[in-house]
Length: 197
Image 1 (cartoon, one colour):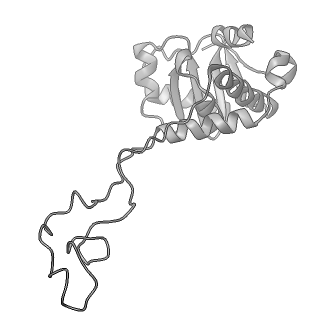
Image 2: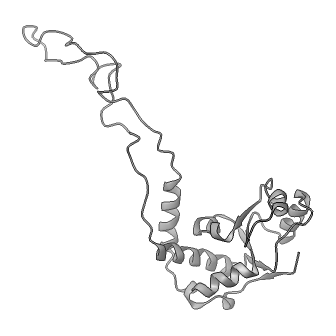
Image 3: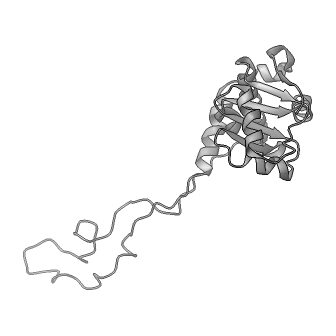
């Protein structure tokens, strides 16, 4: 493992520092919404069994007319206007906004001195204790580790760590960048990220 460098605000392109925080809020909101299971559902009039016959005659009883004992106001009846699995929770976030959200999340980490750049992140032994030693050496609560390409050894080393999460560069997004206390990123990935701005 090569030397770890803490990135300063002066090392970031201007584009990272001019992003409005609302972009990050909108992206995180959309990301969280997309994770919703959408399994909440109740039985409506068509799904409740029974009640095919009128409970009593329409006229002559002196009571209000009733069509079914499975109507919403009856015990054991259907639910009126309840949740259904037809609901779509997806929120639209365009490409430019996604990029700006990531820029702001990265800039926040840099402002707090929580972004570390390493030439190469590889745990040759494939052992979790070596990956843990690397993470603990940074002195952070939890860490997002970003590699250009995940190799088998590093995957095995990081997969059981509770305070670290290993992703490839194409998996990096604003939500993950904001959720973790610190980010460790390979130099090649960081250069590619800053060059795009």
